Amino acid sequence: MTKIRVDPDLLSKKSVEIHQAAGDLMHAGNGLLNEVMRNTGGGPYADLQSSARGDVFAARDLMNGLQRDLAGHADKLVALSRAFRSIDDEAISFLTGILGEGWLMQAFFGPQRYPDIEGFEPYDVPQTRIALTDWVPVFVMGPKGLTPRIVTGPDGKSQAEIYKSGHVVGNIVGTWTDPKTGKKYYVVDLGGGEFGYIPVKGPLGNDLLGDPVDLSKIPYREGQYSDGMIVEDSSLPSPWGRQSWPQDWIDGQWWMGGPQQNLLLGCMGLEVRDKTGKLVHFLKSPHSNLCGELSVLASIGMTDVRGGQSIFGNIKTYSTNGIFILQHPNQGTTKENLVDFYHALGWEASGKPEKGQPSVMPSPDDLAAGLAAGHKYVFGVQLDLQTHKLTDSGENVGHWVALTDVFQDDDGQVWVKAYDPYENREEIYSWEYFEQACKCSGKKNELGPYSYVEAWQGGEGTADSGE
Figure 1 (spheres, rainbow, N blue to C red):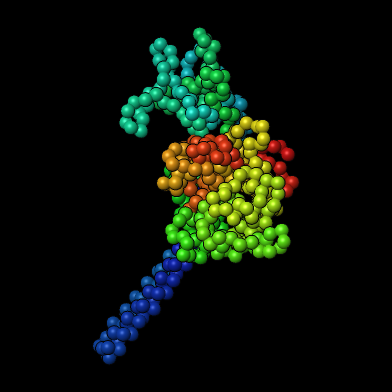
Figure 2: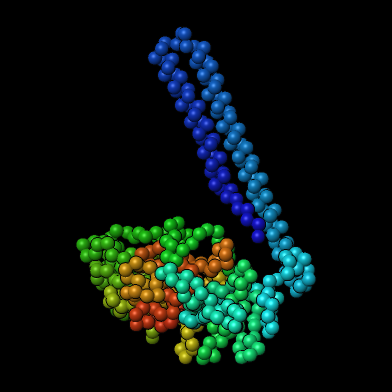
């Protein structure tokens, strides 16, 4: 894809700044000349003043000319960017139409690199899949057959390459069936003429890689990313993602400097009433388990946090007693509680896994498509109490976060952005890291593996239900 990105707002802003600077220069120059004339009495400096004033006006005119040129170039660049986008769209449509014509694709790109080996069956288009288990071995073909691929580990020592669950396996060019054993492998183009072989099935007959991931559904985001990266400029509406709350909600005489999610409900003035209609009293001490409620509110961008917490407090269903949860600082929420909360806020919602169904992590392309359709997701994860970030190890507890984005970078690596209420901020994680954090939510797996809630506006159905 052609990468021409123009920020017309930034160009316009800089153009205005140059125009303002030209005016400032003129005023400063005139002021300086007037001061010189006042202190010297004019006379012998009159000619100098006239000449210098002319230079000041000439400088102003040059800067204003620069401003006009910049504005014109900005318009041309925006038009050029749109033209290239149109060309890209036409090229994609054209290439999609001829994708099945192998000879024509070779004319464009040269022959597809495939291993020259008996039993290999190529895919028409290379696939991307996601590793499903913690033990996905990678082999290479040696003189005596398949051997483990050796890589350098984090400690600098050589080790066999193993993919954890959630690992994004790209450029799978086909499958190979071992003529001797009948065992089937995915074949991955590792580059440089090297191919990796991943067993299709594990020792227990389980699939090691999931269904193909449609990267065309996952938007591209330019930039460099790393696990645990904090998003400095959150796109969520204030106060979400800002690492700040009203002082009387988080400090007071009872609490100093705790996690951002530990709010003082007794200082928020919640409108929660008991069955007799009386206002309910809440403690002016921190509630340490508000991650679920805050994640739901952040996911739909509800800026009235006090009103949202009041709505939760007034829920009284078979699954949820809002007053009881809010009156007990150590009482967390289940996915059933969050489904009830979404319903109270006017959304349809479903908790996964459903009773009697297996725990399955949804694919990144399905989540990206769901987000694009306006669906909201809250995931159960592990939180490291030392780093205050998501983790798959360490001193951790079950926690809820709101998924706000799924995207890919230049290399096709899939990333997620999640709102973490613990410190009221958005954080970025690779798909592999996020999947691991969702697999086991806390030391006791309090929320269960791959527990999440999907919400949508009435009548839309879930992203994977086909409704």
